[in-house]
Image 1 (cartoon, helix red, strand yellow):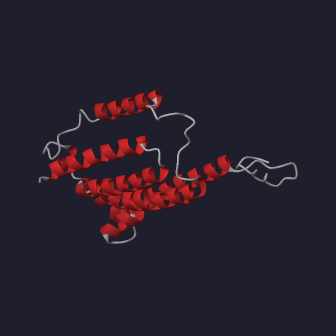
Image 2 (tube, helix red, strand yellow):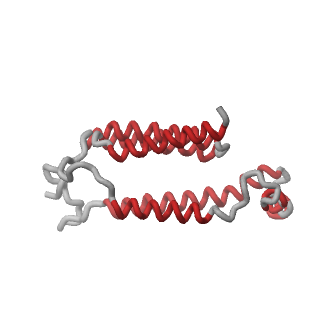
Image 3 (spheres, helix red, strand yellow):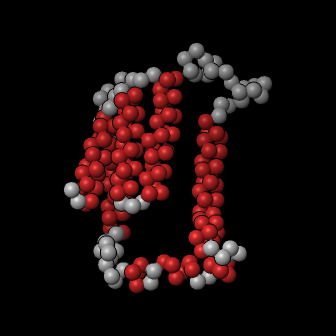
Length: 194
């Protein structure tokens, strides 16, 4: 089986898994399917030679997320609420996804074909942009160390800042309002406020 055929087959599996996750009423089954989805996506990224994205998907998408969701289900229960009736398509969300997908496809129409010798990457490799000023910008004579420590260090710093901001925002949004005495309000018997 060629690499393209294998990628297409895995993409089909991912689409089936996504549809099954959305339609699932048993939350534990949906969590397990979501973990399998993460593993298949990690394999798909690895086949596309995007190993860093594959490792991240395997660790976060299939690992940490599954643990957090199972811990949440242990506290809340396995079944989704039956009050809303059978699940149906959320039309605004579906239209938003279709519009985003169309915009992404439209944005790739002017890109050169994969492996084209006329692609900017083939005419002037990315190494020339990084390697020429690196001895001046970095004090280390090893080029790989300069790239990882200097350039990738900024990337990691800003990723950490984004994650910190998201965590701080969640803490601010999900905290309980203070009671009259300045202490957080105690939850009621059904999980609500007393």
